[in-house]
Structures are given as C-alpha cells and as structure tokens.
Image (cartoon, rainbow, N blue to C red; front, side):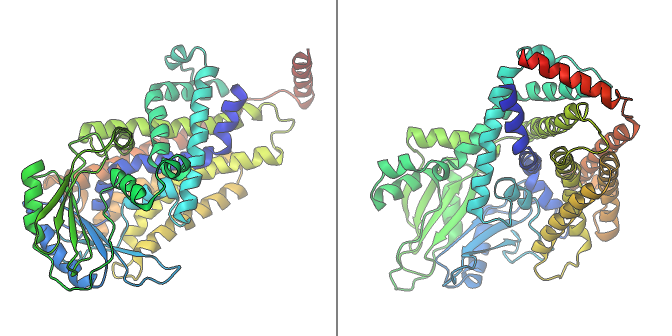
Length: 524
C-alpha cells in the first residue's frame, strides 16, 4: 500500500497539482473575472433582472441572427456582466460550433471592457486543460482523479497513526518535516479531498462509464429523456420554417421570479428564435439549493404561454445533482466558499509536499547527489516547474490582462498564450539551473510579481486599491489584498529554501555500506 500510494501520487502528481490549484481559485472565478474587467461597473446596483433579460435578448436577436439556440446568464451579486453563448449558423466542420460574449446588464449591449476569459480560464483549465481537445482533456482529468482516489485510500491504510500524525510537526528535520507537513495537510482536509475527488468523477460519469446508460436507454426518445434529467439546456428541434417574432422575455422571467424568488433565476435559453416553434426555458438559480439537477419553466417562444414546469427528477439524477453541486460549491455563501477555498488550497499543498518529499527522501540514498540519475533529475525539475512555475504562470496571466492593449484582436486568447509561454519558460529555467537555485528564483519571482500586481493595476486603470477601499468595492480590494497574502507566502517559501543548507552527508563509501545493509535486511 505504501508503494501504491507513492507511485499513484507521483505519476500524475504534477497534473493533479495544477488541477487542484486552478480548481481552488475557480471558487472565486466570478470575482476574478470582475477584477480582470476594470472598465465594467463594480457590481449590479439596482438592475432589474427581467429588464436586463429583455435587453440582451433583443441584442442577441440581431447579433446571432439565424442561430438555432442562444443562452445567457442573468445578473447576480457576484458578476458585473451577463455571459452568453450562441450556436454558429451553418458552422463548418472543424470550426467552433459556438460563440460567446459578455453583455452589459444596464444596456443589453456587448461590454466595452477588455476582452478576457477572466477566471473562467482557470475553471476550464482545471478539468480540460483549455487548448487540448475537450474530450481528451476530460479523459486525462478523470484518469488523474482516479489515481488521486487510489492515493487517498492507500494513504489512509498506510498511515496507521493518521490522527496522531495530524498533531505532530517537527520543523527543520528534513525528510521528517516534509512527511509531517504532508500528513497534517492530508488529515486536515481528508473528508473534503475524498469528496472533491469522487464528485469530480461523478460530474463526467456518463463520459467515463456510458455503458449502463446505453444499455438501459436504447431509443433516441429514452436517451433524450435521460438528458432532460441532467440538463436544463433544451435542444433545438427541427424548425417549422414559419417566421414568428419572439415573445417578450421579461414577462417569462417575472413568472419565474414569482415562483422561485426575485434573485433566484439563473439563466434564459432560447431555441429556434424567430421561428413559430421557438421555445424559451427560464432556469432556476443554483445559489439556494444543494443540487445541480435541472429546474426550469418552459414557455412557448411566440405566445409566451407557460408549457411546462420541471422541478423534479428521478432518484439517480437527484443523487448526481447533489454530488455535482458539492463539487462546484456554487450553492455556498461567502463564508462556506472561503472554507472550500482554504481546504482545497490545503489539498494543493498536500499534493505539492508529496511530490517534494519523494525527492527529499531519495536524495539521501543517491551515491552522488551532485550527479543524480536521470529519473531523479527529471522528477525534481518537473516538481519545480509544476509548483513554483505554475504560480509564476498564473500571475503572468493577470499581468497580461493589464499590459496587453485593450483593443488588441483576439485578446482573450493572447492572455492565455502568455500563461502557457511563461509556464514553458519556467520549465526551461528549471532544467537549466541548479535545483536549489531554481526553487529560490522562481518562488522569488512569483512573490515579486504578486506583490507588484496591485501597483500595476493602480498605474494602468482608474481603480487603484485605495479607491476601491474608499468606495467599499471589496471585490477589487479583497482580490488585491489576497495577492499580497500570496506574495508573502511565496516569499516565505523562497526564504526558507535559501536558508536551508544541505547537511553534510556520509561519504560515498559510507552510503554504499548503508545501502548494502538495507538490501541484506530486505533479502532476509
């Protein structure tokens, strides 16, 4: 079990660390997106959701003319824009079938703020690695999550004194200190880590294990019914060919508000707009319920008449919906979201300390630490790039948001390109520098970039930190204060690595004798 725990964690540990860290910051992806769109108003003030829906529907009717489906979020306390997507009419094979954009709730027009994916990039990277084909990305994420589940179970079995170890930390003891830190972080968030890993697999269960559903639901009608149990995105049928104007969307939203609450309507989806068979689905928000199972009101898109109300699903679909909601955490208020964030951050640290502990433990057994074998050298360099290098790359993504020209074409993808370019440069740096120096330099660089980012924002935008505090804009102010917290954390890590001095080890001959004795014991 010890070997299984070690190798299950190591072989996919670098990807798991990236998934954990980007997934952690995704709990505040809406707030990150607000900071990355400084031209947009701070938050919704007194915007009426129904009126905003009508404005955006009118804009999409012209912008996405000929589209068979478009959908948009309603304004909320956590987002200062309304995100939308629409099917591209007559999309050519190999091209994207959807387009997306952000809209101002007060005008219904596309936002004039800089083009950016904001925090949505970290969310998408977390489970499909962005540029990779989505299907491949999700398969790799699921493969790594299964390894994580194996590592959790085998870790519990391996550490017999797991709860005692939680209260034990011996600093300055080399390998012992790394093991104590790894154990403490593991036990602290053990229920969360098991939950978040298993529920991550459940979110894509029909992709990883489709055979049960394929056996149970054989006809297209049965499969369509199964899809309706899992998603509120109604699929466009065949158009009638008879043009007809879309009924006012605001009246439909008001009906949904009367049923679920003023601030508890989440999304509007329209199929076949401009056709006599148009349909409009107004979905219930996710904040007030611990389930992602679909709940929506279906309207005739031409007459505006209520056709159906979907508020109940079967037991299996409801179980999946609850597990899905537990993974995303969108039901949580601010305090619970912070708890998710902190425990998930501990999960990233758990993976990171496990990776580092592998090299610390084996360095003591090297015949010549100055000339390690290739396997050890590669693991050590990948550790540096995937841990310290990822921090530099994520911060560089935020720097690119402030430095790239606002009117630049394809600006959102340019920011993403900066992230991957800097991460690649960090890997190259780790491979060309001594390991200890590479740790210090990349951690120090991350600390400096994080600490200077609020100053860069003050120079390049009209929303410096002191103004955000004075105006009570705690999304902006809180984001930048957290940047300084993370800068201090990275600075502390760089300082500890710089202060740590390798102990004078035994001679090569002594090491050989010790290793021979260990082999004799194993043989006996």
